Image 1 (cartoon, rainbow, N blue to C red):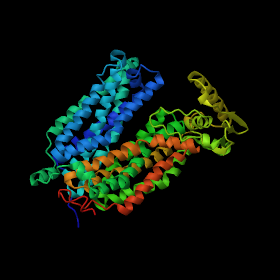
Image 2 (cartoon, rainbow, N blue to C red):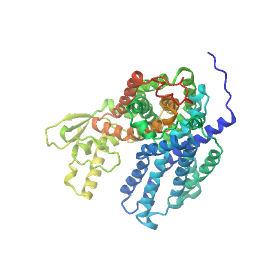
Image 3 (cartoon, one colour):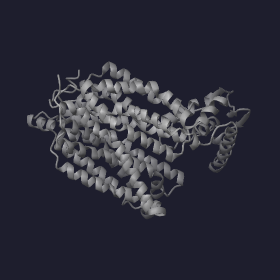
Length: 556
């Protein structure tokens, strides 16, 4: 059957634009706070040393992600009880005002301990609001979209990550240029304060929108759920579909997304030692090139289905991550690749003394000689082999014909540990340099076009799994519990499974000694999602989401 070509109406464009502004806020705040974490640490945690202040700033950043699933429960329930539009207004107002108030907040020097406490509270408010924002945006747009255009319409929401990234970078660069040396003193506030413009535009547009047709129909028929949380998660017939959405769709989508847009940057800068500015430009270029594919795959899912595109994205990513990241090493730092082949490095240590260095909040201390040795090499982006030593042996790093002994840090005080760590790190750096390992990637040796091509492929994988996901999550659940049911798996998958990816991947690298070993985290979860999705997830693009009996029941 041929579907008549649909021309997007003015109202539909307004719905997409208004809904997308909320996710622009999400990404603007994400990149803004992440980029300025060091400055924020100095301003609000100056009562401790600089390193601890930075850790606390990152913890405040992470707090916003940790509470997102709870925001999904709070605002998802509200959206299913009182309506999408009004919940939408509440989430955008909380999120926007919280971001704006950060720019007004007195520093630690002005009001003492109250400053970091208020900052963390604002981050928690932002996280709660964001927990309801994405589910609301996806639900609202999908319920306004024509049946054969839900994938295309909701895919526009996914493109806002790029807009949020560039918006934050532009505002920060312009502010730095304008304020100069005063940026760390007061100029950092401007990017937060200008967010009020985004809030004003978004509120103005959203106030003029109508409630979604599906919710209006449900309200008129008197079929609204009286207990969305209980119905979504307290009844196994529905809760199992929430679990399937999480493990059969969102977890795979999350790890592919974070690998393509965040771990790739981490790998370039931390493992391959590519200049940070050049790495950011390459990532930005890949985003510009690949972003239109969100709409391409969203539109394609309206014709061939959501499931085959998402599953293909997970499978192809899992099968090609290792060669692609090997290619990044080859084209971004060929000297490192050559050194790894000609001068392998070996850590000789008692295996029982080596721990898995998983440190999600940056506070754990790894003080035994094996962990210290592995940590120095892992942070330098250097692969190594492991060789077992007798129990109690102090770890040693063999580099060619040289051997550098590590030390036991748990018998030293803080100052002595700092001095010994520097001595050990310097000795290792000298030895690896003599063995041909570069301290950083030579800019003249970086093949920028090929690196850009590989990064673009990684982002295209992101567009495959992320472009159709909003429409599919909306279609999996009936109108009465849709907002609640789809929001929770989305934020658990992306906030926790995706958010921990860089930390877990680094811990895997340090544990095994292979700079590519961290890729097993996204590969494993992408393959898990592929298997579960292929077996248990039903196609949804054909369902009528305006009927309160669709979603779970029809997708059986």
